[in-house]
Image 1 (tube, rainbow, N blue to C red):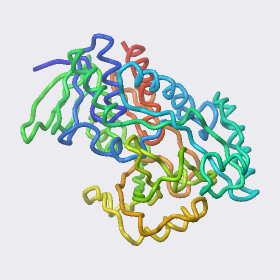
Image 2 (cartoon, rainbow, N blue to C red):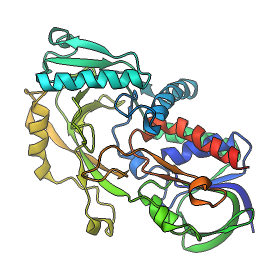
Image 3 (cartoon, rainbow, N blue to C red):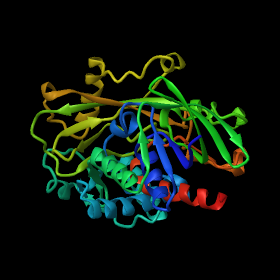
Image 4 (cartoon, helix red, strand yellow):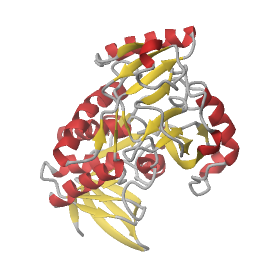
Length: 378
C-alpha cells in the first residue's frame, strides 16, 4: 500500500495553496479532486477580487487571514508573474444613512489594521468617473484583481516541482483512522485504490461536510451546518465608465457585499453577485450555474443607484457561482471554521468549513495557518 505524508482533498484555490505550502516542508503529498481539473467550482466562479480586509469583525479569522493573505498574495504574484492589478475600489454612499455606514466601515478597517482607506467627496468622485452617482465614498487603494486561473496554475506548478502529485477525477470514498494516520479508499476514475497517509486535510468547499461524514469515527454532531448560496453575474458590453471597482455601502446581516461593479484582467466590466440561498431540494440536484433572465430587472434596479445611465440592452448574463456558507439566511456573521484534533479528537485530520470569500485573498495565509496545525500535531 502506497503511503504519503499528506493527502489534501479538494483542489480549489485553498487546497492548492495548502498543498503548495506543505510541499515546501518536504512532505510527500497528493492533492485530489473529484472534478476533471483543479478549481472547477467556487474558485473559478467569483469576482477575482483581492480584498483589503475591511469588513470582517476584529480578531476573526476572516479579518486576520484576509489582511495577511492580501500582502502575501501581492508578493507571490510579483515573484511568480501571476497577472494582477491593485486597481483599488470605491465603497459608495447615496444618502446620509449610507454615509454613516461608511464611517463604520472606516472604523472597522482601522481595527483590522487596514489604515490606507481615504475619504472621497462628491466632487472628487468626478475624477474617477463622471457617470458615477454617489454623495461620498471611501477609496480602498489596496483592493485589487487577480487572474485566479493563472494563480492556481502557478500553485499547481509549485506542488509538482516539489514532487507532489495532483490526481483529478479522484474522490475520497472513505477514510479509516489508524495509529499513525489513515487508510483511505479513493475512487480513481471508477477504480477503488487503497492508500495510507499521515495527515488528511479536507478542503472540499461545497462538499466539505459530505466528505467529513466519510471519515470513520468522526462525530457528525461536530460538523457545522453548511448552506449553499448562489450568486449571479451579468457582463456589460458597453464602454466601461469606471476606473475603480464600485461597491455599495454594506447592509447589515447581508449574505454578500451587494451587486457591485468589478473589472477583470481583460478589462471586462461585470456586475454581481446577488445572493440566493438554495433550498435543501436544490442540493440533491447537480450544481446549477444557469442564470435566469428574470434576474436582469433586479440587477438593473440595483446598478442604477450608482450608474443611472447604464444601457440595459448591453447587460447580458455572465457566470454564476455557489458559495459554501456557514452563515444561514437569517444569521449574523459566521467565521471560517478550521477544525483540528483539539475539536474532533482524530489525530492528523483537519477539516476546513465555510471557506468562502475572502478565501481567495486569504489562501496563502490559510495555508500557513493549516501548515502550523500540521507541524503542531507532529
